[in-house]
Every structure is written in structure tokens, then in C-alpha cells.
Length: 385
Image (cartoon, one colour):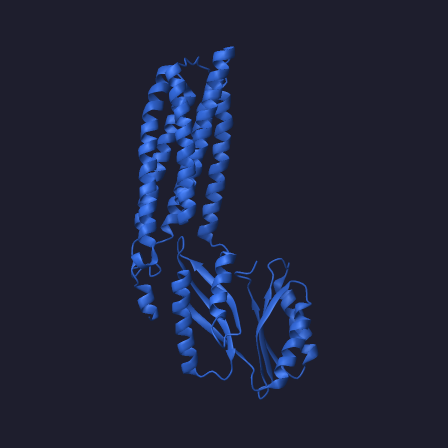
């Protein structure tokens, strides 16, 4: 299988179609449940003059809207790559998750405004037994729905479903606070639902902001999952002749959709045909096992014809790794004819000035081998912990 075949492989083969169906099915369940709850709560809230119950109904409608957005986002994200978007449309799922976060944030701000209005101009609520029974049932439904949607979202790696599940859980808290307010009113005659509404609104706003920040962070681009990176490197290192796997870069084009590149260390005796066969085998194997397409595999050659090279490498690595903030060295090669030494050094982001560390590395190696030209690359820590 070549790279073109990997790119055109059907969605069924990668399991993405099944994932999309699961997301849509879960979202439909959420829509039906929330519309049903919203209708009952709105009627009860209006009849009992309870702002808390009415706001609760509005939140259910926002949850239904979130589920609709999840479905639309999933459908659009599943579109095949085209000329304008050759890496697919998977990142649309992040945009739909961001919209849901904004809806949650808006719902929190709106309910806070309404709660403050009721604090300034309170209305006497009129709770009935049926109202409390239905609200109690709604609490249970939202708790179950929230856990279910969130668990499915985590299982299929859907931020939209996870955010919808969190929103549903927050709604169960709102409904529970309404019950608390009703009980307090029935026992003491004191109405506190507007104050409770304000507190819950603040919690919703906080949750919406956290969801939004988390989604924006993924759109901006985060470090790849350490477990996935380790698993890919182990697969690459399982091939005979590959003595090192470094510089793994994974570009996220949607949940569970990665393109990437990596460098491998192989003996300097490998021919072009040997490397071609090895690289193709690694590309196919990584895609099948990890659903990651390595669009580029770079090569570091390892000295096998120069016995002194290994000693030079060990001495240099030991000295360089003693320098603060240097995490790793790799890709070492000595060319005696051209009198060059080349290798890469990974410097931590914790270093205040990474280029200053790089200069320190160059100075240290130059002191050890002043007759050699240095070709030292400053590497970025993409996937290491």
C-alpha cells in the first residue's frame, strides 16, 4: 500500500463512519430529551411564576441547540478532502465545540441578568406538588443524560459531546437548586431562588469560559498525546536497523486525525533502495496501527565505518547533556574527510533563552574538537514530556 492508497482509504476502514454515527445518535437522544424537558418546565415555570424554572427550560433549549450543532459539525467534519482542504475538514468539530461553549457562556450570562432583575424586583413564586415532582424527575433525567453524553464523548474523542454532557450536568445542578429554593420557600416562606439562580449562573459562566479556553487551545495546536507519541516511536523502533526515532511531529486535523513526520537513525551503509523500502513499510505500519499518516520520514545516518566516531559521540553527548535545559541529543555523525560533526540538541521550553543554551552547546563542543566544523541543530521539544 502506498501513500496515495492510505489517503484514499475508506472511512469504514478507519472506523470514522461508526464514530460519526455514534455522535449523531447520541446527539439525537439529547435533542429529544431536552425538548421534552423544556416544554414541561416552561409550562410549570409560567404557571408557578418561577423564574428559576423558566430559566431551566431555556437552558434545556440551549442544550438541544448544542446537540443540533454537534450533528451539523460532525457531518461537515466528515466531508472528504478536496482541493482547497487537502487534509480534510476534521477541525470543524473543534469549531462546533467552540460554538457550544459560547452557547453555555451566553446562557450563563442571560440567566445571571434575569436573576439580578428578580433580586431587585422579586416575584412571589407559587409552587405546586406537580411542579416539584416534574422538576425532581428532570434532575434525574439530566444527571443520567449528562453522564451518558459525556462518557460517549470521551469514548469517541468528541469535544462537542463532552461539552454537551458537561452542560447537561450543569443543568441538573440548576434544577436541583430550584428544588432547594422551593423547599426553603415552602418551609420558611422566604424566596431565595433568584439568589440561587445568580450563584448557579456564575458557575455556568465559569464552566463556559473553561470550555472555550480548552477548545481554543486545541484549535491553536497542542502537544501531541504522550502515549500516542511513545507508541508510534515503539512501532518505528521495532524495525531492524532503526536505532533511533526522533523529532516526531504530529499535526492535528481533527479528533483522531493526525498527519506527521519523524526522523530515524539507520546505518550509513543503507542504500537508497533499502531506505525507500524501509520508509514505505514504516509508513504503512504506523498508519494501520495508530491511524497516523507519516507524510515525511527523515534519515539520520549512523557511523559504522569509523570506530572512533562512537567514542566521540559518547564524549560529546555526555558533555552536552550536562548543560542545563538540554533534554536530548541525537542524529550524531562524523565526516572525517570534511572534518564536520553534526547532531541535534533538544532544548527545553523552560529555558529562558534557548538560543543562549544553543551557543553554550556550540562553545562546549568547539572546545573539545576545535578542528571540526560544527553543524548543530537546535530542536524543539514537540512530543516529549
